[in-house]
Length: 165
Image (tube, rainbow, N blue to C red; front, top):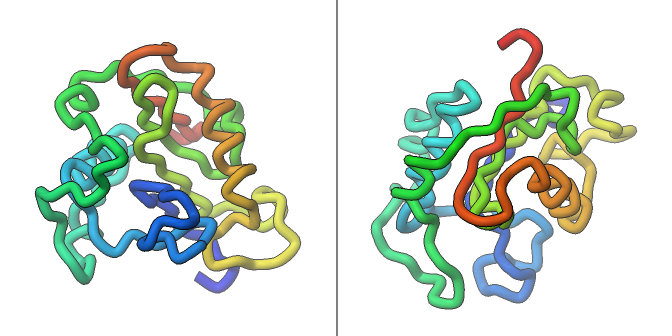
């Protein structure tokens, strides 16, 4: 989209020095692994998106392996049973933040949708491909601020509802 508005939904933010991160602030996920697709699909349903048709167009389909032994895979069964907290999008700490799944207040997956937001609403003075012009640190600060709305322990889903929903 010309001005960069888009849906931004990576399943993981790997450390910069991880081989798959390529030292990018927001590395592109080329393949979803064990549970990531399910976690993202469930979050999508909560915010009103049916993401499976999009995921089917990925160059590489999700698999059941987990290649990140230093990290835990998403707890899919716990996500399926997780409580969902809904807040107005006017309370979102980041423009376009639609939903975040947390495990003990650590983000598991998230959806940012900047489509339909002007550059001014996104706090931008220049277009970017991501739809927001922020650093990973600022992005994580926003997710951590949002985490205060979910329980300290366990898995929970936080959804920011738009006024028209």
